Image 1: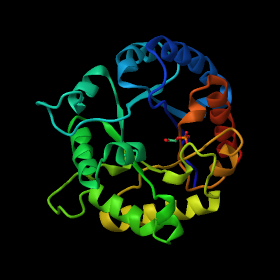
Image 2: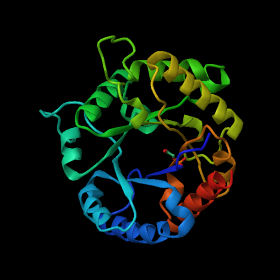
Image 3: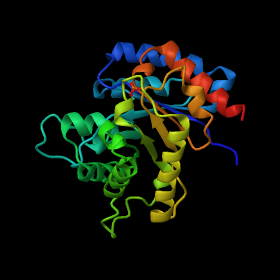
Image 4: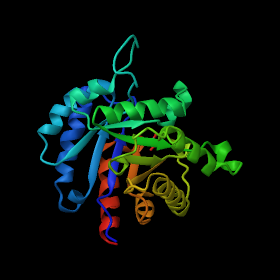
Amino acid sequence: MSRSKPCFVANWKMHKTIGEAETFIKDLDRHLLKPGNMDSKVIIAPPFTALANLAVSLEGCETEIGLSAQNVHFAEKGAYTGEISAGMLREIGCAYVIVGHSERRNLFGETNEEVHQKLQAVKQAGMRPILCIGESLEDRQSGRTWSVLEKQLSVALGEQDSSSNLCKHISEWMIAYEPVWAIGTGLTPTPEEVANIHQQIQNFIDTRFGQDLPPVLYGGSVSEKNIASFMKEGSIGGVLVGGASLVPETFHKIIELGTSTVNSQ
Ligand code: PGA
């Protein structure tokens, strides 16, 4: 079976001014024009403040680069000081929204139920969610990895709500498996462990929703050193890159090595 284009999502978190973001995109566009790199799908998730300017920059690019927000509020509008709605993101030109990142869950107390509401808002606004799930070190050490991931998936995807048609076009989403203990630590699971979890995620979607499967990404300390070993696994549809996506040369190298690994298979 031929693999689809590998996907590289840059999650910049709370980094980069508008000017820095624009310079990065110009460099990235030039890099993606190199022959092998065109076989990749690249999405940038800048901070909210850079989204509108990057939407304009991306229109002027020769290559196709997707734009994602890092978060969204679930309500359409209202008295939610400091929050941004899905409709507002859509208006800017965002096509994707990262939902349920572990930093949102752990630092800002986001629950599985809220993740579910956010997914509904993103879908209603006509954007594609990049749903993040992941277990803590404690979960992993006590053998609860799959039960935690299964719970995150089942509540987020609205399994408890039989009337929900949230997952009707789930094949257009992305699901990112990001073990919390691997984020920003330099530690990673082995590619085989990731492939095994990805298989379980795909089985879950298949048996619960019987739909074409969305690409499943891996995230957590992805670097130019380990990208090839992850992309060798056929079940890994791409990567969500935090720290290593901030430096253009490093992110370029990740795209180049990841894409050539997939192409050489
Ligand atoms: P990291 O972050 O690549 O810096 O580990 C990944 C993420 O948080 O999505």
